[in-house]
Every structure is written in C-alpha cells, then in structure tokens.
Length: 69
Image (cartoon, rainbow, N blue to C red; front, side, top):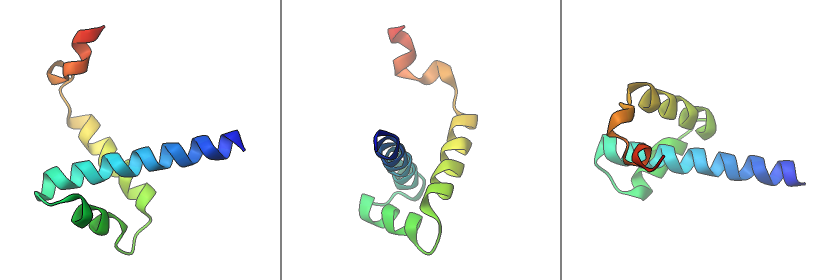
C-alpha cells in the first residue's frame, strides 16, 4: 500500500510540474495547461518528457535553491 501511495504522489508531482511548464510555455492558465497535457495522451509520459527537456536546458547557477547548500 505504501508503494502505491508513493507512486501516486510521484505521478501527481510530475504532472503538476509539467502543467506549470506548459503554463509558462503557452502563457495560459492552469486549466488550459492541464487540458492540453491530458488531451488524448498518456499524461505521465508527456510530463516526464517535458520535465527532462526543461531540466536538460536548465542552468543550475540560476536556481535560487542552490544557494541554500
């Protein structure tokens, strides 16, 4: 049961992050981004692909959280 819960939380986190990425890319609201992400596709696979693209292009020095270490 705990593994299933962890997997659901992980999936929800990935989808939420991907929705945020779509909001920025498309300059749209959360509802539109959510609809675009889930429109006839497997949303978790799409979410993981978008996150990978953003992470690959990210400059770690511009991440404000890196200064807290």
